[in-house]
Length: 111
Image 1 (cartoon, one colour):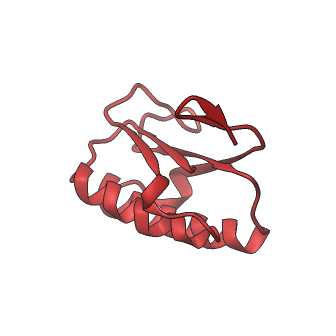
Image 2: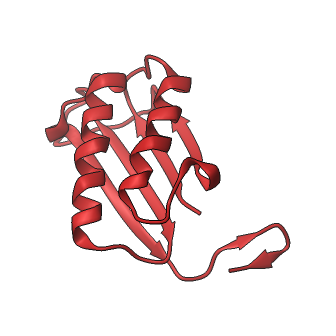
């Protein structure tokens, strides 16, 4: 049950393609796939990083359960690459935040 929230002050070039590539990227976390992935894309946001309004991005990734550090490192590399490709945001201006969730509700019940 992953959820990826993408926020940037730049324009997302191709939202559908980015959504699909995020679906592929999430497989860096064992047991996660696009089949259960929810994505929120927000571009042209009022965002500042290091006091500047130069292009920047924040990717918040929530997963049900946990993963190894190496899986997160792999996913961070994939996310930074997608940030450059679709948002024109350099990796040094991209944050990736992970949240491991132990309770997740869906379709009238909780996991």
